[in-house]
Length: 211
Image (cartoon, rainbow, N blue to C red):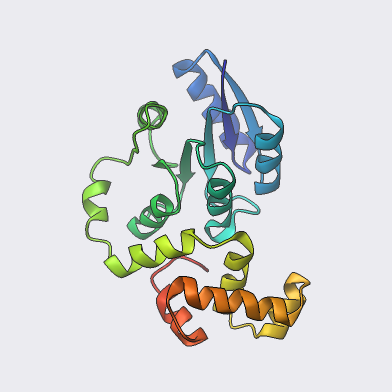
C-alpha cells in the first residue's frame, strides 16, 4: 500500500487535506507530522513513504531549510510543497530547492490531485500559468538558488546567520562550535557562492526569500 505523509503544523488543515485525498486516493495509508523534526523521524522510521506533502514554513522548516534538508537526505522522495506563500519568487525557489510540485493552500482538491498524479508519474507540476511566469524570474536569482541548494545543512545555517549580520564569534556561540569552524564554513560559502566577502554574500542573496 502506498503511503502519503502530510507534514503541516495545523491539525485542522491536515485533517481536511486527508479527508479530501481519501476520496481521490482511497487505497493509500496516510501519515501525519507537525514539524521538521517529526517529519524527519517519520521518514526515517516508516518504510517506503511514497509521497511527502510539505508545508513550507512549519516549525523547523524556516527559510527553506526543511525542504533543502529533506531533499538532501531523501533525493528520490517525491515532494509536493503546499504553502500560503505563493509569490512567483517563492515558487521559483521552491522548485530550484528540489520540490517536484507547488500547490497554493487556496487551491481546489482537483489541483492537488493533478499535482500528486503528475509527481508520482515523475513529472513536475505547477498551477496553470505559473511556468510561463517562472520564465520571467531573474536569471541571477535562479542561479544563486541553485548554488544555495548545494550547501550542506550547517553551511546553510551559517549563511542565514551571516545574512542576519552576525560576526564569527556570535555565529560560533549560536551554533555551539569554534570560531575556526565558522571561518571554515564561511570560506566554503565564498567558494560555493563564488564571492569574496560577506558584503558580496548579502548582495547575492538580496533576491532570495531567506528572512
